[in-house]
View (cartoon, rainbow, N blue to C red):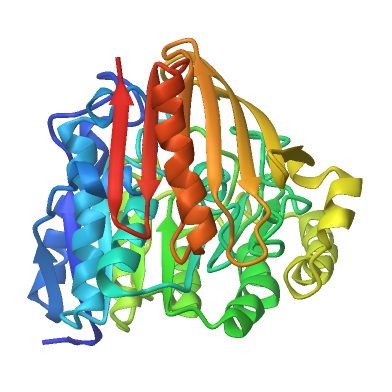
Amino acid sequence: MDEAKHSLGVILFPAFDWSISPTHPEREERLLYTQDQLKEEGLFDIEGIDEHKPGVATREDVERTHFCFPEMEAVATRSHLVAAGGCITAADLVAQGRADKAFALVRPPGHHAMKVVHGSRGFCNINIEAVMIEHLRENHGKRRIAVVDTDCHHGDGTQDIYWNDPDVLFISLHQDGRTLYPGTGFPADCGGPKALGRTINIPLPPGTSDEGYMMAMERVVMPILKHFKPELVINSAGQDNHFTDPITNMNLTAQGYARLTELLQADIAVLEGGYAIQGALPYVNLGICLSMAGLDYSGVREPGFDAVRHAQRPQIAEYLAKLCDTLPEVYFNPPSLSQSLAEGAGGGSIEREDGAEWFVRHKNIYYDTDSITEAQTESLLLCGSCRGLLKVLSRSTKNPDCLGVEIPLDACPACRQRGLELYEEAQARGGFRYTQLINRVDRQYLRHGF
């Protein structure tokens, strides 16, 4: 019998009772074929590979990560909490040393859910990776974490949550936003004023194959990870970059994904997208599991692959070679705040309020799944002693006049005090229908509404 070189915990949650609609790509059948494939191939008969039941994320798990308006129960169903709980189970397995690696094969996905949540966008309600990361930080003392998002769609929600966090490196390899939802994820978007260079976007042309993905991994992702030295590496392992996926335009194969996984050596993988539920997911997920466990994956082959028809065009290799020459500079030599402002990167400006300087971004966000429009003003206090207090004013077609205040991990006493005062003053003055406080220093998560 084979024995895993790296012990692997697999958390499987198909969410049989949840779908957006009976015919929507994000529906109950999405993981059924994967579940059958893993069992038919005898994956769980391999010594060192074990299946684990998911836990259930709590209100506190979600509210330490998101501003949920009007409240968590309005944006997250039981299935969303179990998907996030499955990620927490994966994190606990690795952090407690019960497994070398873990793969959360769960749905619904999460990487389009931003810091503020009014509903569902890109099939995502809560950001299951971010909920897991904040659990790791609060309960296992992990601080320096890298997220490599290989989903075909730009991980705009994860980027938004960690935009101002210098201790989280976010790298997204995705189909160029000029050709695919959500239309974002360009190299100039490299992080907030205290985290410049901690966001790396790698927009890939339609038709990119295994060859192009490996070029980006070897020339951009791996050198940056080596320098950043994270305590944990997390792979947002969306599989809609497969050549059979019905809603994207890429040419990655199961073998390519397994090689990418082997090179990355992520501690934890989390399923995101992937909607070729018969032709891709069973094979890609099997390849990922074998690769994470350090086992031979060369026999994993999906049906329908044509080496000629799915070959990458020479022009793509030429384009990617030039892109890979320039992208490492975003991390190793990021722009200064003044350069970033002059170039308009991140869409921010500096404004003065009550004798302090704030970095302010105005954002208009559309929740395509729920048809909600949101206008948001995000302000980061430019503090010289910590990464800065965050406040968000939000108004949507679903919820009027909301305020979120976040006192970050390791906030200085002044930012902590100012954050508490902002939250208390908002309630005393009125004017907001809903207010929420995320106080990471004191592990205090409060909300007020009427």
